[in-house]
Image (tube, helix red, strand yellow):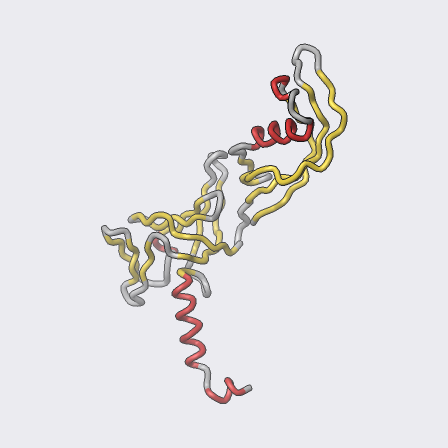
Length: 191
């Protein structure tokens, strides 16, 4: 899920940025501080969306930089357990598929791709034996987050499943909807 989070902190502005206006210098400093920033509490910070307030700055002896008490908003992506996400398949491997969630990728184990016996072909396709459904790179899918690990803080792992109703390749879901509409008796359609 994407969040806009209000943060208040003392922002260090280097002397080399003193020629810029304060707002621009603070924004540059905050953006560099949060570049590639990942934490268990905030998630993956995408960027600073707005500087809300900058108070008077102070200079600390021996440092030479100015510190401004600043309030700003950051945009962050923090995956939540049981959240349903949309994404594109970026890679197929013999053990499953990777799906792009925006700033991160999640992994769908081969056993969680569909309710079928799934085989991997050397051309990079996962295929269901009975349903004949296929999953390939570029497919648009819907999945549910079932595991999140921040063991490696800069490389969080997200486990997904598509083995629940209304999850999987969006084409499969469309086919299911058409099939259900077709199976509805004519009397119910008139209501």
